[in-house]
Image 1: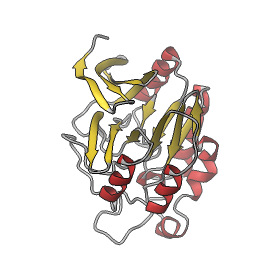
Image 2 (image 1 turned 90 degrees about the vertical axis):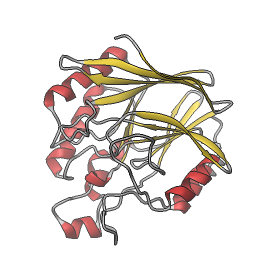
Image 3 (image 1 turned 120 degrees about the horizontal axis):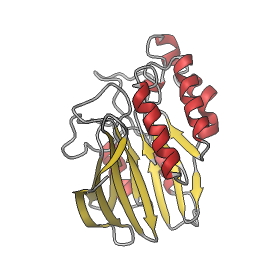
Length: 264
């Protein structure tokens, strides 16, 4: 399961409960959360996020988002932006290994930046290089972070990640096949073509009430050898149902089937 933008503190309890039931029913091998587990970085929000992850009873790994810093305490946000995140969620660190799959995490969030929108992402290229250059025996490699490197096509929120285009070029030339992100509150999967190569960018929706014209949703990723299926599941009032599905060949880095509507 690939989730993002749960936003405990601004989460819809009915949606959160339904997501937990759906995850329990499907029983995935792991849960990945690409940032913004909390709304304001408050202690009680992190406590709720940790309890929810613990109750899933599954291997989980998370990366922080811009909302996972103390929003209303500027001194903490500047001096120790991820202290609370590490206090409550350090047990859910990357890498995560699942058979022939390796998933790493990169922090693209910042507590404060000298730019108009401090919530936008920023890639530390040295940190990215360190992940890319790690020796890995796994054939399939994924990277999770909160912010897309380049703006996803057609999502309600467009992003401007600092050094995102350079990071995208490096990822395309790397052994990493898939980038998992959030932030835009809408499910999306597409090939990102760069001069040095290509990778598949997958964004997840949100479980919060902070919607952007898209219902609450998250992704289910299935792997069969080198073939990856990405299915977006959306909340329909009584629970989550499968909505769209696309299929990708990771060995050739190409799409086998474009997104299509699937039955519940």
